[in-house]
Length: 282
Image (cartoon, rainbow, N blue to C red; front, side, top):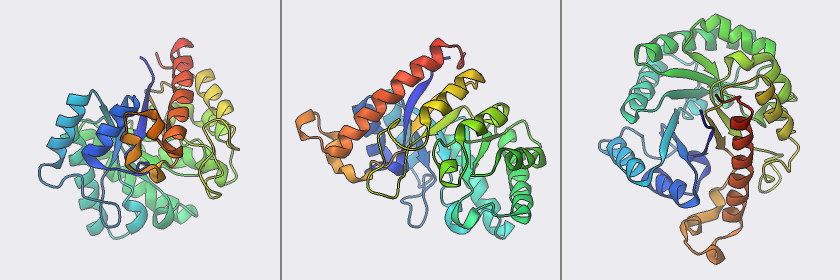
């Protein structure tokens, strides 16, 4: 299986079908989409939107890779079940309609797993959601900054073969962890789509992939060594400052963020070929 290179809708200057078009125009293989919601753009399941996205992706040759529920960072994954469960079902149903194989919910901000009680409560929510995902033929994943030991406890408490962990190559570094060490301890639990970014991200534009402080090359080496079957590298550096010039056909009219995106795509492509050539993605 070849390793694709994709983009994350929420890190681009455009959304919806414009994000699909941008993905095609820069030569990326696929796109992870977001559920949307207050402060995060139009809901993905607004009438007619999913059909339009699928049609545009089909016409442009763009793979729709996954659906993320970033809105849960705003409301809290462990808030009242009567609030969370309908939204989780909405997320999962939208993923089915989009025909993506992977759905993920992040555990940051109001969903942060900041202690044993929060871990137990998060596991209970994800256990229920994993059953719902399995019934729909989906893989459910969680993105967090737990230690390897804590993340395995979470997975054990969820207790589902349909549950995985999304690996982000820099978020754990911000939390004082080594991402390559997480790969070594959690290889069997990782989702087959990996978020690529480098940092630090809070001092102007994120560094080019491989040029930051995240020891990114070491993490990707560990993915190969442990033969994690990575289906897609998804660029999650921030390209939102680029504006519509990313869609320009003439390179002379592309701005700095467009150049950063092109450089990151080329870097990720080289690493994706290495994943395939070493058999890790087979």
